[in-house]
Image (cartoon, rainbow, N blue to C red; front, side, top):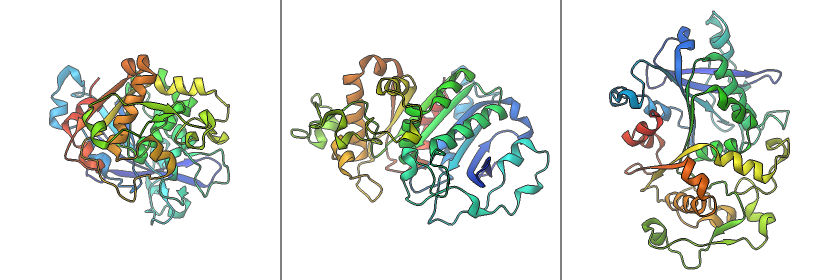
Length: 354
């Protein structure tokens, strides 16, 4: 299969709109029931939709034997596109036709304007609803719910599921894992579910403590010379710096319609087996780095430092969950480039491993 892979749509019943999806795999479409490995990838703000192609198993992955069990397995990689309104959407094919129809003739001439779009480039990262949806309850998280439940029906024998997010995609999947009851219920369908989060501008803090910046330099953080200190925000839980998407205060109702408690949301997120991808040269400031007050309250420095601070925070305040469910994998010479990160042998080893 080419680097470009296949393009398709998932139609959301009753809305007149579609979510574009790219996919790659090692089987023909008719062998859907044979698929054992599912990898779902959410892109960063720049929407480089071909980046997930770098995650395709390599000969090294396939020769890993029992550690990966990939030699005889069928796999698929799916990458939904949270389209930006200022970008020229390309006509895609219909996922509904691809999944449930024997005919592929309807895949041509799809109306590109019918896709869901977000007018601000990175707003999808917190799960917000698309701007052209009439229903505020139809959030980005609900669209992911629809995609995953569709994939469960399409691939009933899938055993190993990987959710992979880079940059804003990591923000999306972390918030989604915290808030989605659908994902929580789907876990019983799969033998293993793993979450991989790479080098985001901000993370979801689970209480109102933040880094004490007064005596901290970036070298202190990256070299791990001394333990980091965290202090409660002046306004406590309701401090503006602790509002969602940076904390658990004032989560919008469409993202938490059942009004789950903070304890429930916190426990749900910490229950997922999660690997943080640390990129030690993702150290540059640029237009896509969040420098808002809530992001800077987490850490004033670059993405690599922000990830290290967050991991130290988790290990300090939630040590049992951290020890049981949190892992890291370190890569270098990638900068803030998802394709380079996804091509790393170490990343392949953890994603395609058990």
